Length: 264
Ligand SMILES: Nc1ncnc2c1ncn2[C@@H]1O[C@H](COP(=O)(O)OP(=O)(O)OP(=O)(O)O)[C@@H](O)[C@H]1O
Ligand SMILES: [Mg+2]
Image 1 (cartoon, helix red, strand yellow):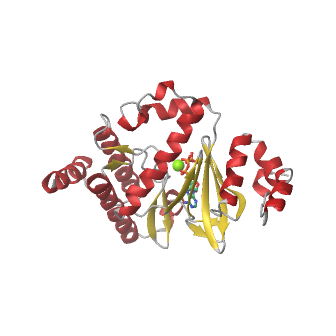
Image 2 (cartoon, helix red, strand yellow):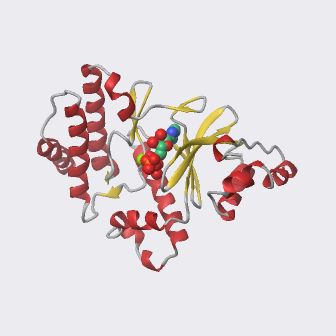
Image 3 (cartoon, rainbow, N blue to C red):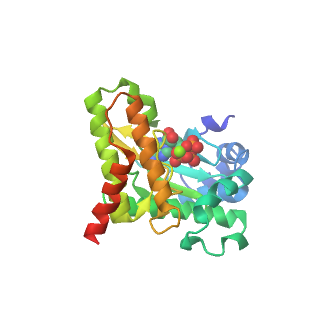
């Protein structure tokens, strides 16, 4: 059985035990350690999710699954706990972040759990102040449960995937919203996304949804300004290539930073 095929729906504790040796265990085992599989069961026992369906996306560091709680679609992002590459990739964001003190003394697993909690906290901060992100629901170990962006298990497209089919005025509207979100995140949530691009924005019901906020950093992080400039530049470049007239990076940057200064 392929991991992409599995469907798990234990209804009772006994059924849960039966499933242990079947679908979920066999399939998830290939990718995840026992602790992760047990963590999925914990979420089912707690009633956070009822069923876990197939993979929506499998990246280097995490897999995203479609899940259900009653009639509600959910997205379950599970970080892989055994990649050295992951640690390397995270370090540039973690070093200098006061929320990650003493991190070098922690094991990789603990580091990944902290990383998962960080994504959850960042989602909460952004959601609260009105940046459209998947609504955060629950976090446990290396598993993050959030609102599913899409319908009936079909995820919404990434900005990268739909941009070519959109009219210029539609693109302009989306760019405006994304720039507003950058400013809101910076001023109100005091966060810089730090990996913002057409790959980390979904388009759902004609609205941009910002995803993948694990690496988002506090505006007091020593590299926050560089990351902010980089985010703005990436976004503007993408829209410019599609034929849109865009403002200068520096202009947008100053607008973001100065609007906040005035208010604080
Ligand atoms: N809440 C969600 N609802 C639906 N699909 C989602 C959701 N979050 C993420 N996805 C899908 O999963 C993919 C990977 O998610 P995300 O970008 O958060 O993880 P990642 O670790 O950066 O993976 P990648 O390296 O593939 O970008 C997204 O590109 C998107 O297609
Ligand atoms: Mg991503």
